[in-house]
Image (cartoon, rainbow, N blue to C red; front, side):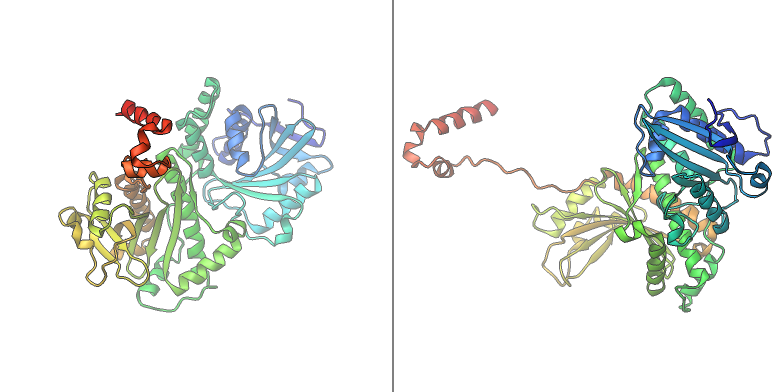
Amino acid sequence: MPRPDFLTGGEPARLIPVTPDSAREQKSVSVLLAGLRSVLELRQSLLKSLGVRVGTSATLEAWIEPVFLNEDKKAVRNKDRPDGLLILRTGRREWRALIEAKVGNDTIGEEQVSRYLQQAKNHKLDAVITITNQFAALPTHHPVKLPKNATKSVALFHWSWAFIRTQCQLLLKNDGVEDEDQVFILSEILRYLESDRSGISHFDQMNAEWKDVANKVKSNAPLAKTSDEVQNTIAAWHQEQRDLCLIMSRLTGSDVSLKLKNDHRLDPAKRLKDDADAFCKAPALNCTLHIINAAADLEVTADLQRRMIYCSMRLAAPKDKQSTKARVNWLLRQLKKTEPAGFFIRATRPGKAETTYQALKDLRDSPELLESDTSNTAATTLEVVYEVDLAGKFSGRKVFVEELEKAVPHFYQEAGQLLKAWTPPPPKISRSETDLARIFHRSPASLADCAGYRHYRSFSAAID
């Protein structure tokens, strides 16, 4: 592969790089970029997350440690030499992105990102992509805060290594790669990414201030929404939300995404600010996971005051059943295989009518327990809730994340995947003679003379 004219240095990305074992960063970038070149579906999947469409006729070049024309090699090496370069060619059009990656606990700072953006601008590149173990809700949500005008002419994206690993797993699990040789290549890439030697990790503990924040909430001490402890707690929670999506994606073999408001999806700084404000007013951490084809969104809450984790899914009660008891029985039939420990059902009624809440194990014997003593109105919403009481363990940085990442899959496996939303039954054609006479605009006595009626009767008899 000939080197582009605007580069004076750089090597093609290799699937099997010849580098020292200590050069994990260089090796990981080379394996990934070579994988993008080799596996069509992988580059389609990853670049689609950036809004870049990859057609089957497009070609991709991948280079590691590129040196641009008119740049002093020594100066670049001593300062900021990018890890890679992608060049996507579609006909006469080119899309080019500079790659900077870190492994292990290494992160990229604001100053370094700013220099890469300037370098990309100088060489008329379209984007800068950073890859680290830091999480982001979306590739457009960068973990490094920059002024808005910094990305005016060059787009800035971020992939976490865990996100990349999950995309590989989904492609393999769902038979998303057609060519058998490319399946083998993708399997080898995934094997490398899952190895401890790669330096790729997942989010496994909350921020350093987590214990202090949890204890302050427990003692009703005030929290400042602009303080480092609150800002870092919310930032860590945002990372954990993304990790939950990746975990559930891997377990279900489908794309599990974070449900965000439009303004939060477009502006991560506003999302952080609003969530910090909400947290100080009501000290609980919340997120909503959207699972394709699930009966409802999966809602997760970590309540710092009660030191509890809640997972839940909410269904509209069936309207063809009149009493709360009958509606609850409809839900209980769906949960007959659920291990009841920790599971509850909440029945909600319109307006200010009483909400009732009972353990699943008790409702199996007595579904009438969800009836209200103060209202005759039937429940309109039924919510399945799973509770985990962490007590003193809640403030543990690692324990909290471990318990949360056990609770969410457990809830979905035991209950969420069993739930089906109620749908109204299809309308039926009336068979009463009076109704049929009205439909065919005849008197009951003259129905036998109507051709449409005779066809209807013949059709009904054939079905029966």
